[in-house]
Length: 255
Length: 265
Image 1 (cartoon, each protein chain N blue to C red):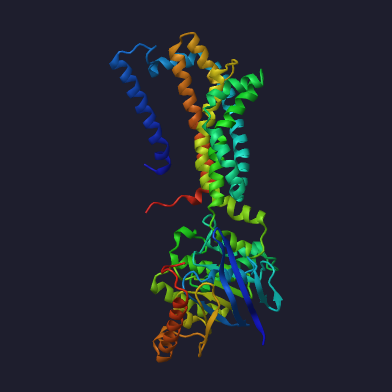
Image 2: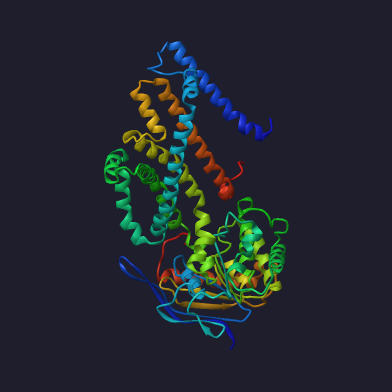
């Protein structure tokens, strides 16, 4: 099989096998759908609520992406400050680690109270708060571990700090940045859904999950989970595509 | 005396947690235009500090560094540098890596001429056909050759080589010594070579400066006769053996005066 087809069919086949095993497990164990819904239960759920899946899926997606973009901007900013200044690194690290250690589920009610009614803003805020940390850390480590010779080859020619950043520090940090971004994508989804489930405003897949729970519609709950997984995969592969485009040089040919 | 590089009475100390650590103390080096000086000395004696001073990357506490009749006060584009680590940029091709200094230093060359110059240098060091490869596809010796081209592409007056062959195996290193002679003939420069290898110093340079242990001062200066291109046989002549013996003795003196731990800096 040619590599292009293989790259597509192997993962698809894996998903199909997974669905078959799932269906078989539920069937063999004889579980009712309130204990564990099976893939065949999901089809009617999607058929019945497809328009809600589109509307709410979109709400979840855009708020996650906006939160993630904010996380990139702020995370890269903080990472740069910490990467270039030792003093700032020493000052900011404990604060950042402490902030990251707070479970964001406990922050949700506080944020919801602080900005009552601004649900989109609150959701974006939580998605941002949960996902900027790995980005900031990766950028700061990438910049602070830049070997001095890399700076020296340009500095010796009279290059400015900005030139050194654009020509060397930034591209050299890109592989670490994309590694962190893959983690951040998943975290941002968790953030969005936390807000949507803990403080529901009738928006997003989290709210759909919450209302399915209220109505004891178990297959719908599972259907939401799978839809979230689908969105997560979509965003993840967008990041992979960006990585291959901008940092493809970092991947070595095996052997 | 028309010296292109002059280091006069340079003293320098680093600030550490345990107070100032003097690394250079009374350094005197003069390199005439077109000259090639090798600097040898015990590990950790401040040889790399010396390169940073000449490159204008740092200023000495006391003393002066002069390049081409001007006192060095900061980095200058008339300097080219190569290190033990070739520090090629992994995301650029070899050709793009070699052309990097031309993006910083003002140049009259058109884009096409810049490419031609880079290609010419790569061919000179035997890297023809590797222009579009990535650094990760090259061996250590080839990367060092590319790094050498990058340090020369903007036609620097002064070439500073900080143990450029230190991490290579013996055969590759000897290959590169001969490449250096070829390069110096085609692209004349005034050079300072920091090295741990005494054979390398007498094979490449026309003057060898031995530094004392830390804090380093100029301990001994050896003039190498019959400079210019030569083959490796030159290293097995009685004259070469005599020079090596003298240098080895001087290094022992340097080590004895201020013993430092073994190992590569």
